[in-house]
Length: 427
Image (tube, rainbow, N blue to C red; front, side, top):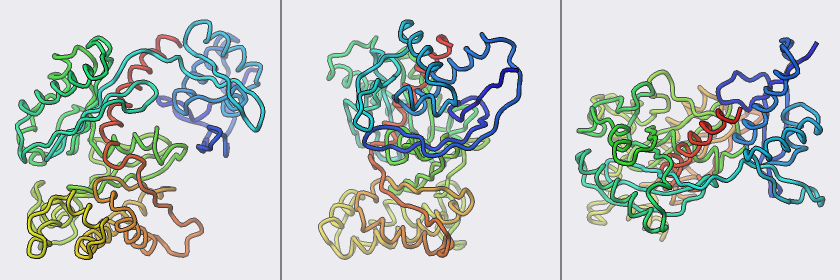
């Protein structure tokens, strides 16, 4: 009888193994593995070999480059099996190896073959847009930010997106044909089924805009649209503070609040894409009317307009960037406004954390750029409301790229769709 080991490295398969991986200076290492043997008979040795091949490619795609020993540990197979598969896939051009050092010893690092080409990541909010270019190494090469008028028109904004993508390619001396895919992070809930705006009013005028069709028509490449907090969470999971953490919550605190939920290594969107919309949780039943149509949402008390209006008498007109900058310079009024906002956001975030029980909370967005001015009261509020005597207090970290991560996450998602299509052809 032949037994098949299944490891939780598949994106599209139900896992039998739960794997924890930690980023260390020397790379990815296995922390824990608990699982069970699936006693499903395989039809032949060929079926087992194909399953192991698919497993290996998905493992590297999910966790990045690693040694053959690490691959064998995660996959639950022998190093000889891994070695044979690696040699085959290197010959086919699917994998490449690089010399490295593990625990003072020389080793071969196995990685997906580097493919020439770029992806554009776009972040569109009420007040601005950002465009980055990245390759399969997940690093941004170009970063353009463009301010927008509130209630900007989708046609005008998307024309600016097209222009910025073209300018970014030209800046790298890259041909248009080198653009492989585009990811768009939208500052509003995105329907997971239609990839269009899910809630009217949050980006006025965008309700019936098919962003994917418009950009695909211009660039003739695949386009993927997602909510910006989800894309930021995806970015942190792949190249940020959440690398190696299977379960975490990302909280975006800027001109409005949102959250991205990562469970078992994947972003949780919910049936319609509304998972994590904590900015629309009611905090004041008698409060102001929110753009979503409800009353007293969290966003009505911590968005840019509300926070800066608290300082109009003493500081005049401010932007959110001004508020953060002055807080970092030590301005007591600005520090107070940000600290109070952190407490309000922490109160709501604690409810989400009680529901999903994450290992980590990552905080990003403009307000997080004030560092401990925001993080300390946010962390204290979270700990106070999340069972203070718990055996494992929840960790709170600042995002590695607190402002760029939505755009970069969109670009990384686009790259991964390209890679996954290539993997399907290789498996």
